[in-house]
Length: 491
Ligand code: AMP
Ligand code: MG
Image (tube, rainbow, N blue to C red; front, side, top):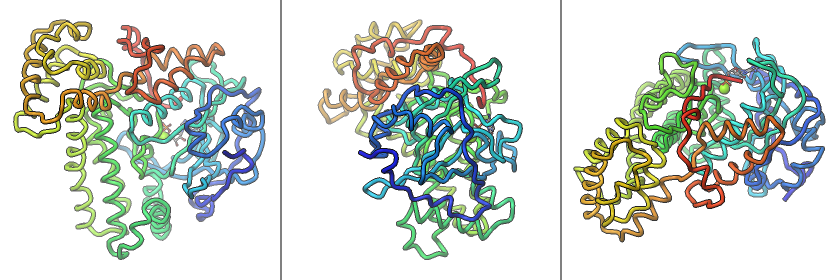
């Protein structure tokens, strides 16, 4: 475990030509203090977690101290926001501070979100508030715990610096850690500004650092293979979102990671009552980014990326890559959903079983997470008479009883022992998700100076498939007020 000054840096991005970003130093926040640090992410960086409590760490990540080795840079990118191209994007309130190398040679970006103005801030103030920083901090931990690829968050820091939103809030920073911060929008920027040799340079950079196995592919196919890789990673990520019930909320191409990491947590939401058309972002009036639109928006975004890469890839290769998206997504989603029902055998009648189940969940707005978790605890021979166990989730159980009977019958075709099925189901159906109201409770306590709920949630969400008897209340159904919370774009 290292101290901050023992970290090893390899700042590859800042060595790229000047067009890729602008060097900026973070602007100080006043009276900084630590809100929470995630020890799991310290482990990833091989950073001694004690360091995170030091004054130096707190000062460093609130712009009050410098670290030799960091090379802060605001990355330039553009992107399609709600379907419209916006040329003026870039890190408007964040900085890539540096890239750390672990003893095994793994590279991690350290990004500071909320670090002040940059040339890409437009009308923004370059700041982040405590509320949005905690939301991103907890969501990154929750997704990682669920086994879904995501950026990470090392810590949240706050300050007495006032930040003006609908009300005055505390300025905060989030330390984001990821294999890469490259977005679809980094490529779009170079394409739309006709910097095609830089476009190739960025593709080479991505391949060298993240897809090195493609270096042995002849150059005529290499960029097509790179696009195929991005398509596949995106398809897997979105299939995982759909199975777990995660809505991202702002799937603009500047929020799409080329490594298929869930990226930039704003008005995201985990589904409580099952509603396929769930819109978590209250500024998304048309429902462009509704839960059930995510698979097709993923493809829309990949088309935008492919277009930006067209100087490097011929049409047949682009078509081949994009055509692989839907089957890959379907395949991964099917694996995920079959695991959720504990179905190892594939039978023709299964699609009807799923259709009926979704219809049931939708018609009665059943809690998506607790339905599957409850199902994971009922042995096959008890299913037909287990309706009572589901009663808190259903207003009327008639259709449920029928479905449970059908499901029990279907399980007869399974070859594995029933206990094994239930084991698998418990590993695929989390007990704990980051419900909006839980995040809200953590935020409200933190705004009063009490960070205990943040830390408790962090701990539970790290292993959401396990039982946590002392935190049973985090698995409760949400209260009505918790279902009605409004969250909208950037804060
Ligand atoms: P987001 O909605 O967080 O994905 O941000 C979209 C764009 O707006 C990015 O270029 C951000 O850097 C920029 N942005 C968001 N919030 C702020 C802010 N408070 N100050 C400056 N730029 C911002
Ligand atoms: Mg963004």
